[in-house]
Length: 169
Image (spheres, rainbow, N blue to C red):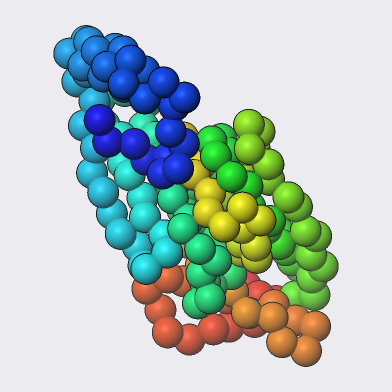
């Protein structure tokens, strides 16, 4: 049986694995779940789950991404923290391009709604890695990357090169 949660071994490995394997096989025959693995970079992998009554993606962060960009998303979603936790910085950008930020510790067992226009970055993985399950809504917009310089916010769409001041619209 393949486990996404490395290091989470059951106490009675033999019987638990056989029992889990039987139930997974039975469940798989009932709803036919398929997975597609998408390696985003060296420390971030997505596992797309198909065949559920809803779309879902498991995110595995295996270490802090030293090259992560501050970003938003093309869709709103609900995230469920399955294992581990993460600390994120969330930016609120004002119409004049100024901003302020706040830091949030997203802990195992909690769920959070993330609007498509939420600008954020993961700044720490306290346990060293984290697994989340997201349930995305419909696409709302093109995603953007952000930078902050001299007290002002700048953004660019994911498929563009040039950053522009947020106050420019």
